[in-house]
Image (cartoon, rainbow over all chains, first blue to last red; front, top):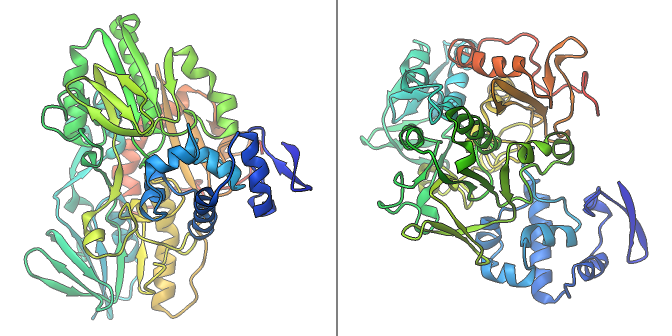
Length: 104
Length: 411
């Protein structure tokens, strides 16, 4: 457990930098988190982040890669282009959501 | 006469039939359960078949043996659910009007969802599953004569039922080839779309060393796009390639086609369900249990068992116009075979990840959580008896709590 400051606000993050409490996240923080991964957010990125947040709210879980494509309307190749090399885990971190995980 | 209709006579459906059979007022209610298949498989047993520990006879029974006599059992394919009309139509033309519907139609593998996987020159030739009896048997035949080569275990996408099974498979394969004396000539690689074999910090801390110790390679963040059968390689969406001699695939897991035909599911045919009451999010007289839900809980037999304890009460509450209890906490309790006669046990729910401790009782256990032990392995093997004789019949298991307990756990 550690603390980080985004958009002037101190938040709690775990050892891998994911938000401990996703409710601490605000949209303004996204750009700073993305910058740490050398990603500059565009409208396209924000569309992904919006879907992640709303779907997590509704389902209580991170959407799967398939769900990103079908329900989120974000083609997989585009998803990889926007968040290279591990798109789901990167976009979740930027969106202040937990890391996609299994039970163990 | 009002009807409670249960779709699916697998683990969850069978438990519900048994539970509700003891609770309903028979003057006004009857129960009907429908399944197109005759055979009930002990699915946790499939894991042991490729390695010769179990054979067919260990995992096969007749579904009818577990349905109470007073429950109407129909063996027929279900075509469509019409929730607005409270009716279900069967392949033989029969239509059943229900007052309460319980969807227990489960989850199955869908290899044709991955390009190139279901090809007839590929599937069960060099690419196998162990989530079906056919796959487990075919894999046994292949492993019998395999003394060298690259064995790749790949999870196509999440969610899958029994999320720990691929890991167990890797551990058991390591033990199997070691006992055969050929482990040095077998390359074992675990390829996952997740960021690691263990994604929970605690599990990773406690168990993470195991893969290195057993010389099992890991390729994380691999989202498979296709199987190139002739070249014997799998390719990811971002063009990473992995060669194999034998591919043990855990393909895409989806809910039953019936859910798609009825337009009642999400993109994987899972039905939107309230995560605590198990009531349908869209129809108040429909409940969903087991692998068929869209819940963030694991898809596992133990989860269905704990759900059944809660759902039987909520169905009765619904019948009696009482409020539903939001009691399901996502509790799961699973053994993880680690090879050479040992296993782990994990116990967790929606909010609490697997941690060390004792189960079911603090200090005295006797099972150890997140610790390798021979007793845990014994527990896993003994579970077959418990499954056929106690669990499926909805009989109580004293000491095993429906909701996860924090006592005995190192939180």
